Every structure is written in structure tokens, then in C-alpha cells.
Length: 214
Image 1 (cartoon, rainbow, N blue to C red):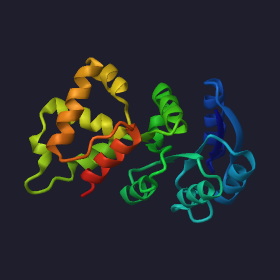
Image 2: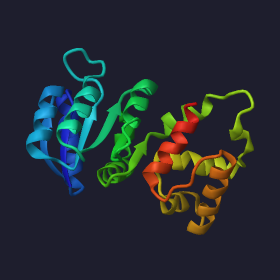
Image 3: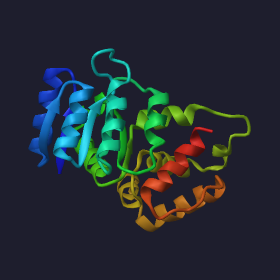
């Protein structure tokens, strides 16, 4: 898989480059600002862009803006945003793009190399990767008469993993369940929350996130 990296800190940029190359990714460009990211994506047509949300000159949301602009110029490019903190508005804006191949991870997740590499592959393949901390904070936003109360503890575990972008097989492995058991839990969850069933992992993630953000 071909990757473009956008990160203004040279040491982290070089570290990401080495990490991905060591895991059989082809890093075709590593840049330090948003404009260079857009140009690199247009020129190289990578499978995925791994982008720091805050880039020069203002270090606010330039990385996100540049990534979305690059994706307009090169449709189909997957985007994995990395951030130091949970920033709900930016995560929501990224997830509003329903084309698939999107992710939002905290930078601490990079230290868990196996999980990070898996997330990069999943997003590059058109899936979704949402940091567990983001999911946790969305779950914590409770409402009066919260329908999440209808779920069993196991169903809540499954729902959290669905929201992260995990497949049924991936959830089964994490929770040490059969795939069939996970499928039954997902069906029950969708029924209790009045969500439409979908065979597409990305579409069901969007359905769950839309529910959690209401």
C-alpha cells in the first residue's frame, strides 16, 4: 500500500516513515505542511494519507482541511487523521464524509504498533478506525431516557467495538466469541437502538456514530 505522511515534527515524521516501511507499506512522500500534502496526494495518488490534524502555519485544523481538499482532488484516497487530543468537532466533520476509508486516532495509539498498523490497513482498505477514547467519550454523553440502558453489558462492549470500525470477525477475536455470537449481538443492538441493519462495516459504523452523537 502506498502512503503519504503529513507531520510537521521531523522526528515523528521520520519515525512514522520507518514504522510503516518496516510493516511493508510504501511511503511515497513525507511532508510537513498542508499544501505539500495536497500536492503530494495529487502527484503520488497514494492509497492512504496519514495526517496530523494540526499543521503549520496556525496549528489548528490545517491538516484536516488539507486532507479533505486532497481527497476532493484525488477521490478514493483514504484519510487517517492523528491528533494529540480528542477533538469531537473535527472527528465529526471527518466522519461526515461517507465515502469510506476514514480514521481518527490519538497519537498515543502509534505506540501500540500492531494496533496502529492494523488501523492503517483497515482505513486504506476502505474501512473505518475510530480511537477507543473518542468512542468512550461519546458513550459518556448520557441523555435522559438513554436507550443505551436497554443494552446488556456484553452488547455495550460489542457496540463500542463496532463504533471503532471493527468487523464481526475482529470483535469475535477481541472478546473471545464466535462470529455467530457476535452477529447475534449486533442484530440485537441494532434492533434495540432502532438502527437499520447493514452488511457494510463502514455503513454500520456511521449508523452507530450518528446515533451516539444525537
